[in-house]
Image (cartoon, rainbow, N blue to C red; front, side, top):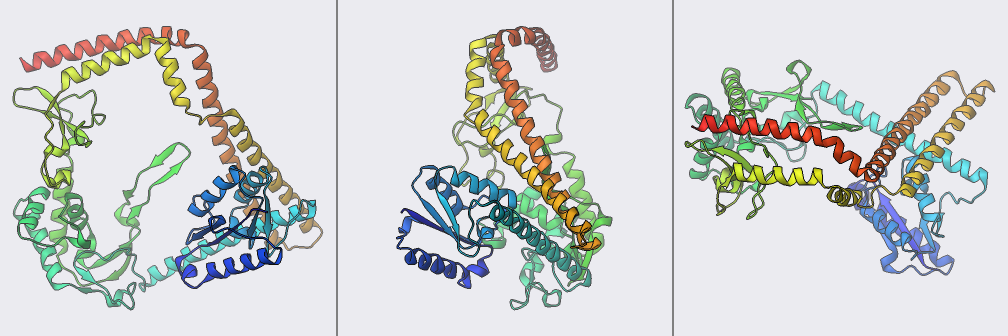
Amino acid sequence: MRIGIYARVSTQRQAQADGLAQQLERLQAHAGQHGWTVAPENVFRDDGYSGATLKRPGLERLRDRVALRDLDGILITAPDRLARNYVHQVLLLEEITATGCQVHFLDRPMSQDPHDQLLLQIRGAVAEYERSLIAERMRRGRLRKLQAGVLLPWVRVPYGYRVDPDRPRDPAGVRQDEAEAAVVAEMFTWYADEGRSLYGLANKLHQDAVRPPRSRTRWSVSGLRVILSNPVYTGEVYAGRFQEACRTGTTATPRRIRAREDWMAVASVPAIVTQEQFDRVQAKLAQNRQFAGRNNTAQSYLLRGLVSCGVCGLACFGRCLQSQYRYYCCRGKLSDLNSNRETKCRSRFIPAEPMESLVWEDLCRLLTHPEAISYALERAHGGHWLPQDLQARRDVLKRGQVRVEQQIERLTEAYLSEVVGLEEYRRRRHDLEQKAHSLGAQRQQLEAQVDHQSEIARVSLSIDEFCRRVQKGLEQAKARRSGWKLSGDQDQR
């Protein structure tokens, strides 16, 4: 038999403690007892990857080999090594067994018997609950340490400070690096009192041969902005300053700074600048943001943010010269502080008017020729909207919802039979209801994808009708563009 083995540990510390080696030894020994030989290319391992995600390199290679039907069986120590999430376990097991490959768990052997399948569901739910419980306990423990002022929230030590190497998260071990602290103090003074820009400040630091933090080759404007906006230099360490980026369905929320009242004061460290000086710098940074290129609407650019240089590949920005002619200019032609390139790009300025006219005419041709739209839709398909795949995913989610509902019913029966107490029943039912809600949300997202695929198919079958429908709007857009061009020409004259 062609046997593969899979092992996983969640953290690098477990990997260094030979937790992964112990799993591999047990799996190899079990294969030897049955007379199976495991080839080196059939050993799949994930060192330091969480079982809550399916994006694991070892697991990806295993799934690829299974899809090619190169394995007859897979040995795993326990189901939670395969995945912590019950839905992920069901998805992987169904995907693997559909190819004729069998999965063997050493600690918890499973068969197709309904009782074993029920036991697998219960253990998967317990593993998922255990992971959620550990994560919540760690979050609460970290929060209590932050509130008590015995834990630093830093991932990286700010420039200008050093920590005790034996206790890097202890606020009591924070001290100033005299050389770097002097540079930070000069930064605030140069920027606030001497009227320098961030670019000028970066140039001065480069000319003075001041070494940037973390072995970077040169100072960057973004790095300077991070330093000048960090309140730690006033002597106060705060946690919870940032709201991390997140995605809910199709809505994405970028990373942003929370309101000042939502920050948590953690500890006090040696101050490098005064609060008054820090406030002046923040006011100047806020004022300069109003003059950023993204807020400049004096000139209209149809392709703003859509043009890249054909020579070096960097993005192009709009630029209007004194003659009032508009151009798209490669960012690589700016200084090395802006482009992060040692040499400037040798491309020429791109006249905006011919470029925009060319793109507009091409867009009009696309919207008035059904065969071009059909070809574009075929490319957009790209094999990502296969009905059988969507149906399979929908079936898996549906079965998961049914199983969770059955678990809720069995839990209710156990409570009515006085097998579990009221508090335990409420806690477990709450967890199961959250799981059911999560599965329902995933199913709604999948249904939206199915509807989108159906909409694409309907558009593909009625290209002519679609083209006729957009003709009127296209003519109106042409008229508005002509009026905008005439207004721009008058401004130039």
